[in-house]
Length: 150
Image (cartoon, rainbow, N blue to C red; front, side, top):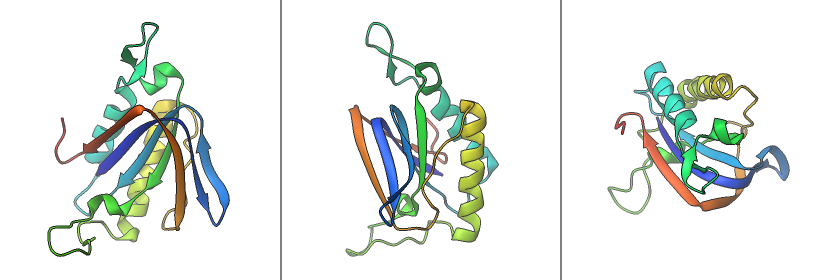
């Protein structure tokens, strides 16, 4: 699994002009699934994302997690995180998992984030043409790949 994380002041996802998920300060997570992923990938990512200290403390030092900062999380499925541009100019999506595999994986990921955060996590609509808007705070943007844990 891959997650592109952005610390945001606010973020929203729209489908056909209607807001289907939005948050204030917190994390926007763009989530990609490949067919080799499993529950261990979800568990590693959820633990890492919930404990990641990228919010300012009283001294302005990035020393607090999203939980400690009281931030929200918006999760959006994004198969293009597994796009390859190795050959030619048209990306290949062959590493991205098919929807019948990736949808339940994404849903389990969101469920585990919700359990760890202790509150609902809004999402986009899986497979829909989504418009994501955000104000990146910092900016802080980090990439996570469960197959290359750091």
